[in-house]
Length: 189
Image (cartoon, rainbow, N blue to C red; front, side, top):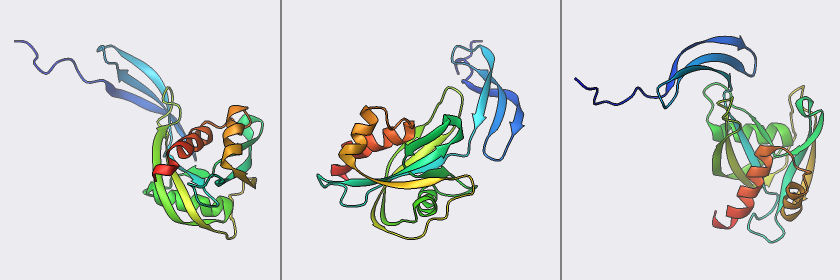
């Protein structure tokens, strides 16, 4: 009798947690691949995050201005230009996370949030997804960064931010992709 269901589906078939930390966990998973073979992969588990492209004026304007942050990143051995972003809390909706992170890192609140996209950051070894939002109609307030966040606010014309991506000044992938996405699709929002 032949198996009409076809080969077993790819996916996790077992494994164990190698490390569990405050931000990430690392699993050693046994995985069935599409050809039916089984192997082991190390996977960094992350709860996900939200990122925000905050527009300080009309996003459709020829003189659109966004709010970048200049933030110390130990893993990058220095400061990076980025968009505001942060980790999802357990059970938190991505938009609520975006609202919270924008307020915490910049002090700004937005009257309008538009979902732009969801991306995998590095699917070769992590399940982290970042939900990206455009924020507009901003109102300033007081920032409340976490103890390990050292952030300087950098208002930047959108055309300048695009030049910073092109010349390598913006090296953070989520920021570069999010700014490019917002710049291309902002007129359609």
